[in-house]
Length: 249
Image (cartoon, rainbow, N blue to C red; front, top):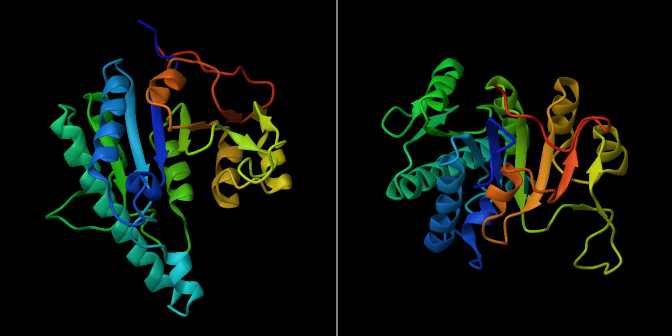
């Protein structure tokens, strides 16, 4: 069996990933497939945290563009991430993975309040932790929330699962000759405006030397493959650092 090259990861999923081929909401089949992939990684004794967007239910930026107050729209988007987090928790526990949801917006009946030390303790005890509610503040995306939480829990890497197999210099669906990058520096991502994550998240990762691995989740088993060091996708980070990190002892 392949051995993991990371000890603790933060997996970033878009809300749209949960809707599958539906135009809205949550596709139970997709949810189950993701849960089983996370279970396979969890079985390797890798500590797993998740941040899930809310775009399958509500997009704050889109609503603000149509006249809604930006702060109100963003809070509604944060609530959508809590709904997705609860759905993912249910799917994970159905396949036997102990899971906790921590929300940046307090809602005691549904989720724990976010407490960094408690989150780390859950991970150490072998529980998957889902960070919901964004950062708890408007004007910040779930990309920024993922970067912030990853740094707070001392994750080895942010793994951003997408519908494409890495970062390209153009949209590969529109430009057949688009080039996929194997690795990029943080500065290149910002200068080229490559939309890996928003600029605040990239800057946070750059300031704290936290690598970002962008890969496709379309092919089943890819989450486990990247955790075990297969050179899939695009790595964003220090250009002189190794492609993968050694497991911490």
